[in-house]
Image 1: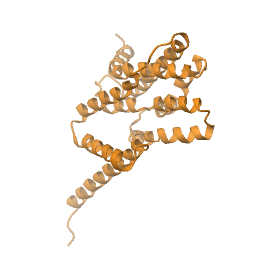
Image 2 (image 1 turned 45 degrees about the vertical axis):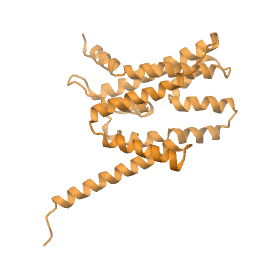
Image 3 (image 1 turned 90 degrees about the vertical axis):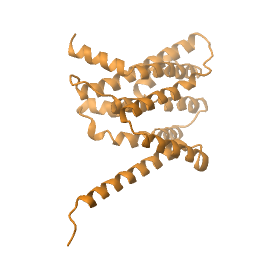
Length: 239
């Protein structure tokens, strides 16, 4: 078995949880998109050139309500602004250069980030190849789902009740994998408490963005405090 084939097999096995979430969720988007009357190929193109699950679902509602381009831009920008926060943590950890690096930045999703930060690689796998192929495989799953859903939505009618739970279920699986890799409950407990507090006392509509900002702020303060204490302890006392 060639090294490339072995790498592809390892990446496929690692990305199976994402595949089981992306294909049904992409199909749900495709079915909703087909109800707008567009040809199924446009759902495929959205999966290729936009590749943002929540934003694509939001775009369906905006298109259905004849929203303007500026309104769509602002709404989707705010929705996807969360990518800036965890994307920054990967900037110095992307070994790929050139077009592959640009593609990884474009293709970074919540689920891809989780796999990149929680997967333990054997010695024979190149981190650069793994990162690139995880991003590529995940987008392929999403495009397949979007295409199948849009095509089937134009051919037959069926109920999609309950399929919206696929995304929360996928996030839960990835969170468990992150915990198994990190083995530290504190960040997860902190995120849970901040999320609940934001939901109850600050804003329901902007809960995700606000809770991410608060979580990042608290984690940065904790990190800065630990670093300051370390420097203060290790520095020689002044005479």
